[in-house]
Length: 102
Image (cartoon, rainbow, N blue to C red):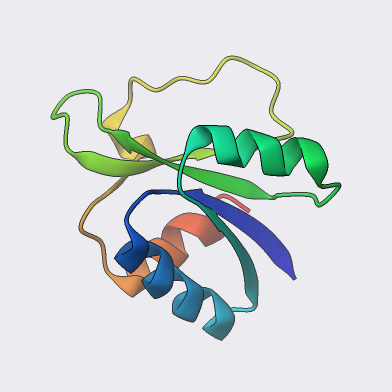
């Protein structure tokens, strides 16, 4: 089972993701802010295949998730709108976005 962390302060999105992840054999770790995410990652030896961070798209400044791979040590390019999952999104869009990246 692959583990994905979502950093988001909207409980409705986290609850929705929890149900979707169970259906697709993905483990969800949900946190409400970046500080909590860092604490969990430092205290836990669990490997995360992907971290989705609540953010804004670079051009339109619309709410979106930005994906990060914890094993990726190179600089992260956050200038391309296509790398973001724009909100609101459907269940299918969320799963497709994750599966393309894990």
